[in-house]
Image (tube, rainbow, N blue to C red; front, side, top):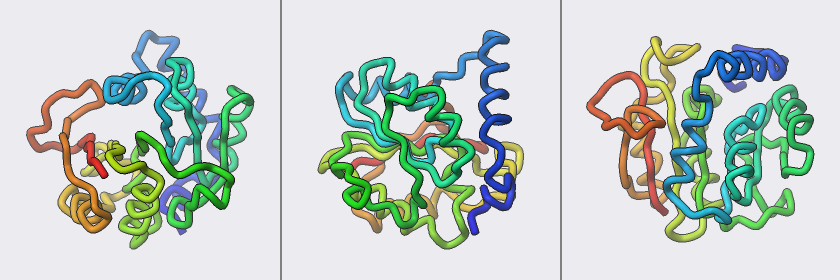
Length: 201
């Protein structure tokens, strides 16, 4: 069972969306992830939002002109996403078993983004499999972008994966580290409890 399911019971979609809506109303920037991804590739590129949740990142990328597909295991999150953007492509799937073709989706994405602590919230022991599945969805030269917390201050659960372990998973899947940042605003990574990693297939 995933740490996310343990944490939420997969019933938190509306609460999650409301929290970000309140942040946006207060003037906080809630589109850092989408802006980060948009800086990496031109509009029109294909983006897979892996662990898309309520669709905050993907909906913004679609508004910016990207061809997006969202995948998440949590039906309560997807229900909110579909309500907010019914015209976009949302799929319910376990990332550890994700096969785009089985969903009728072409596996040649230019970028896969895993925002929102996806890797620390996976079922323990599935991290390498998920990296392999997401890599297989990328075209040659495509990018895997993942941002997640590394310590208890940046996570709702105890840390589940270290950066070196994540890099090992990526290397085993045939990915190469391109860059690493401390935030979605592309601040330099100098250690610390959060990292955004960019790997290329």
